[in-house]
Length: 267
Ligand code: NAP
Image 1 (tube, rainbow, N blue to C red):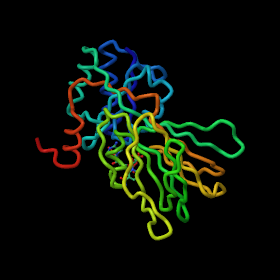
Image 2 (cartoon, rainbow, N blue to C red):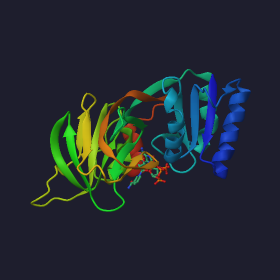
Image 3 (spheres, rainbow, N blue to C red):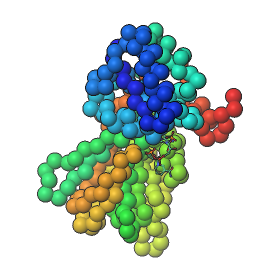
């Protein structure tokens, strides 16, 4: 089996990366940054996002594991004291694959035939540096509302514990193929009206944001990546056809991770 170990880049993560690499090479696994069957991300959930984006082009071939060098994470759910157990599991056992949904976002530009497409593991957001975002929200082609406010966030189930949670969105189990739209400070008065509640859409639905003024520039985030875009006629979101594959060696139920991350990690 071919593997690669990605590190956050700090001293502790680099040390653990070297230890894992040495162990796995001793177990006759092959190091391959370009075509790994398994990628081990060492750092945090943020590091995991960076690592996964580097392999979005080979999601069908590559499975992922995250090891956290700080606190327990959602993607990085192995801890430094479990390194030996992890490498033994990787070298000895055929692992189980758990698939989680991703979000696809297509940006349609003026004077451009084909949209530019992106994948997100946590979420995609739209905001502005100055002033409010004003967008027509359509669901399956039908006008739903005109949104005016700081911005909108569309998250995956596994991203529901990240930015989405801070915006008051629901935590969604990643076995559900859904996307969730949450508002960032919508303006609601006698002139402007939005639903105000997070919306959870199934995998066969599509949602579009249509800028009311396409000449404005917007800030788009896709997980940790931020882009400034102009001349946008529409942004389209859907549950992606591709999924991310996690290598699972031990059960770690999602609700236990939620409990240990947000309530208490005392066993
Ligand atoms: P960052 O601002 O340096 O870190 C964001 C925090 O979110 C880190 O503590 C990270 O955990 C945690 N995180 C990432 N994915 C998570 C998940 N699925 N569930 C729970 N927590 C998660 O940014 P970054 O490291 O580049 O990560 C980008 C992410 O930051 C975005 O995808 C967005 O979800 C999140 N974010 C959150 C807020 C907010 O909560 N108000 C605002 C902006 C962005 P680690 O410490 O383990 O890396």
